[in-house]
Length: 193
Image (cartoon, rainbow, N blue to C red; front, side, top):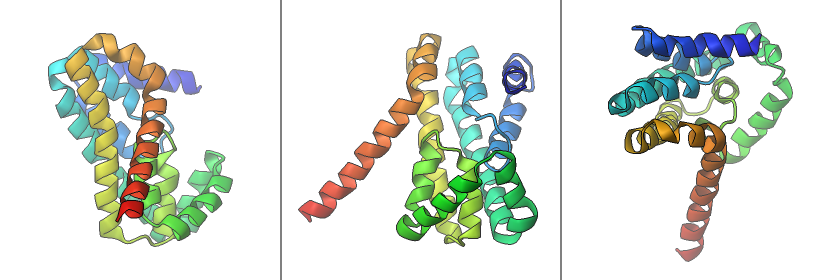
């Protein structure tokens, strides 16, 4: 079933409604839908590399707006909507772990989740449930989601469709390596100063 859903998402890249499908996909994935928007972003950007940054912007903004919905679900409707979504995906145990991360690292957990392949919806719902500072949540979400999607858009813009297989294969590793380097940079700054 997940494979058919994945193929259904990809088919939108071949229609005139691809940009709107990207808006809906990026929005819904940030709070409840299982397919990440990267798949449609890559397909659209590969089809028209000159619009790669436009698609990345659409994806980023829509994802953050969906993250706001996830935050609201966690903040106002955790028992009614948030918990059932987490249970549906079988990530309730991850939710408890993420609550611990929020207590320890606050909004940094959102930044890492927004950039890496970790399911962002779990973090948006948990951010609301943990009552993370809302304006900071939005800012960090915008920065991390934009970094992720503009990386994809930039790679396709500069290297063309031939980079698609590289992105498909290594995006998760690149994301994780970037976060590790970012954390090490902050540690170095803190240690030096």
